[in-house]
Length: 175
Image 1: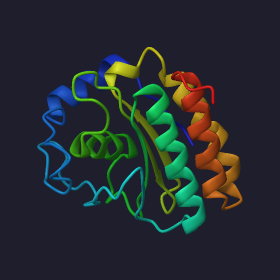
Image 2 (image 1 turned 135 degrees about the vertical axis):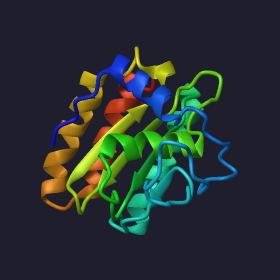
Image 3 (image 1 turned 180 degrees about the vertical axis):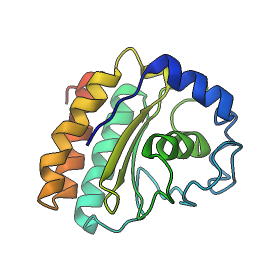
Image 4 (image 1 turned 90 degrees about the horizontal axis):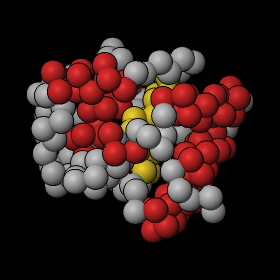
């Protein structure tokens, strides 16, 4: 899996596509200009398993870990799985879902969204601009590289867990 994202072109793309004008999270399924065709997934909490790949116990563990992370750092991180990307690029879907849901503090723009689309074998870590210095594109790719061996053996919970821990350590929560 490849995750090649450059901060400046991504910012230009987001501004040009209109995804920055996200509605508040109270309207999670509302369409956003530039995000046409993105999966219509409703935010269900810190973990939204729309692809149904996580056992309930693993989902609860991940949700608890994400709550700890938010409590310790003030940054919000969510995990979402999608059964389909609807033919769109994983980067576009990740960024649009993060903006649609309003992940992170609005003023600090410090949200992190981990998106896994197992049917398309794609993963993406979308980071708000407020965390780009703490979680660079290279570090996000390294977290994805930690996930993929687990995913190859269908251990999605294990892969997501190591990625969450890696991102948390990089952004101020060494646990």
